[in-house]
Image (cartoon, rainbow, N blue to C red; front, side, top):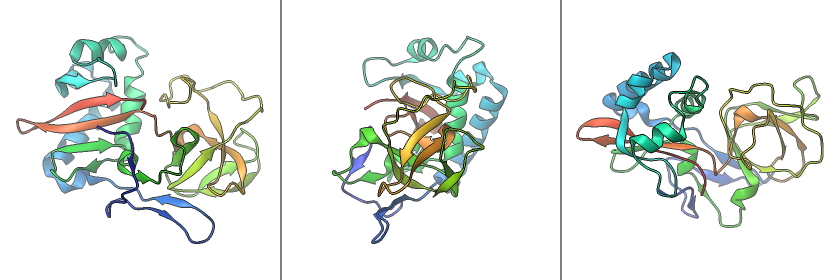
Amino acid sequence: MTLIRRSFLPACLLLCQMASGQRFDVRPQNDMYKDLTLYAFVSELKFIVATKDKKALMAVVDSNIKCSFGGDKGIDDFRRMWMIDAPGSPIWSNLSRLVRAGGTMDASQQTVCFPYLFTASIPDSVDLVNVFFVTGGHIDIRQRPDSTSRILGYLGDELIYRRPDTTHMPACRNKNHAHYYQAGERQDWVAVSNFDKTVNGYVYWDYLWSPFDYRMFVSRRSGQWRITSLIAGD
């Protein structure tokens, strides 16, 4: 289970450099409609997440689930790492974000990666540590980390750069939002530049995915779909 493929550009998910404007587009993809059983599973998982049904969630988690790039795996490690029994468990916000993004099915049609972004291909020249995927169309990039600040431009379904920033960020207001992988921190706003670095501003966290963010693999096991991996990092 690699993080991001390099060099090869699959036809189903094209990462392209525009001739002008130096922009890399990542086209959205959701393969849950390719298989009726997968569609049913994802629909059930969305309901489980919406109702925060712990028992139902554990019923669709594979007994040998991979929880990290280290040695963490299995039901016990999954329950411990995600604090499943805690009222404020982060599992629900993260799963909600993952299934909402949509996933890409592999060639064998036995495994699906959520979000689809993690099956994209990025050229070797791009430093993964300093980029984000933007999901959604017409996403505001603002002058300051504030929803009332002037809009400098719009982003959508593309690759952008993380920008070093000395601006004092306001405190994170939404304590329950999904964790994205940025030095273990939660921020409501992130300093970014568009790909050719002609526009510098701030984007709201929910539209951004780091290449080191959480990803989920769902695989068919004995005819049943199961969550087989939920990991972050490299």
